[in-house]
Length: 613
Image 1 (cartoon, rainbow, N blue to C red):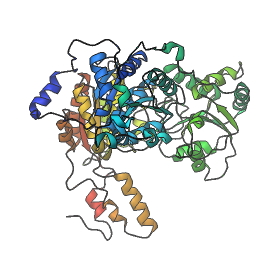
Image 2: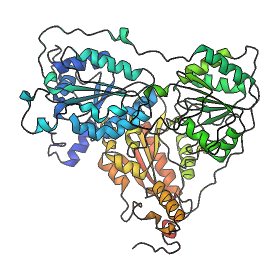
Image 3: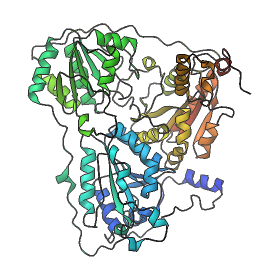
Image 4: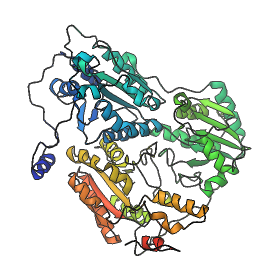
């Protein structure tokens, strides 16, 4: 099950030329349309389930499936997306799901590929993203194993590696069992609450000849379940409480990315006159420049949002991520006096291994079910003569400045990007901490797709590429603004964007540091009465600074950078937008000042510190 060579000795210039000139990998005729092998059955099921793509990094444990995808299906429906690392394959499927709400397929090579992909699977799990993952092991029959390699790539229970952060798994024990296994996996992942599922295909069964007719069930009779609706009596009680509330506040968390659900959320807030708050972990769920939106969307509870929650008499949580945590912060650890109503069904996925269930929240009325279904039901249950009422005036927002003359900031990126796109809709698959959300309001469910779910660094490039794949030909521009650490861990995901002409713009907000960890180290030092000037040691990505633009070009993606002034930034973004409008990926490496005007050397040369070098 060893992997083959990647470029087979081809000169780099020739390889790059082939990537640039061949948009798709042509499949030579003739195809064998007969279902003759176990892996043909699996491939047929993927097509019957209307899976559009399967992202993968090649591996011999699923060589049978690979042959079926190419020589039986002709590499279409699904189409293979070759990746240079399993983690990127999963991240691309995750980004695709964030846009469409539908599962894409991923193939992971044996136990080793599953280990590579496991962090990205965890991200998708925490983000409640649908995904159909195909693994492979074996042969389970030890008599069929080749010496050494087949043994080390066989696991007794391969899914045990990830079972604590997937929704369902299976390992079909025969060719005849494959259709039901894949059908159930698809049904499970496509039914809310969503999560990745894993089907492990025995290499021996993949390469087993089919000796008789195969029964393929009709997927139309095994559709995913519709969104679960909360109990009607609880809805009626909650609606009465909300109708009587004087200062309601609505926390908008996870929600469907369709315009009907979007309009319903806004209508509910307007009927109630409720102050709206939204979270950057969840993506766009309501317009952030609406008069009722009381504070910019946040990662960490802001002073404005805290003040809004503390004045509430009723708090309605709609799919909010970490309700317990935000209430603890808002009320300084004390029990809130406000009545708490929560709509969501995330608890169906909670288990004892991970703690992504987060802090336990006090809830007076639990609308157990789909949050958007709860919104529609609450609208219907409110008194028919109830008219929209004015809400509280939103707290004054903090207006971002123009940025320093010498150094670039995220505010400069936001302003110049707006000028470059010239009004065309933009989808942000990712945004960094410190992004000036007030300068770029969210007005559509696809404006911003939220965080990666599990905080796994390295996901940004893959998520952006997967989102751009889903948005191709939609008229929306896909722009991922990510950190330098995130980009460096996932930079060779860009090769897939180059190979398949996926128009993703990646803007690297490059502070040449794991800056979040610098802040943690500064806090620890101050708490212990030690020198905070040393916070950069072991954190700075500098001396030498990686040349990210050249790394992108090495993957076949055109790039600009390092960009260090306003004129360069304006030109780089203009060029980047032109490239993705033409259907090609592009990267811009922007050197920003995370400390907002303080040079790194000045930080490092603080009290008791010395400049390195």
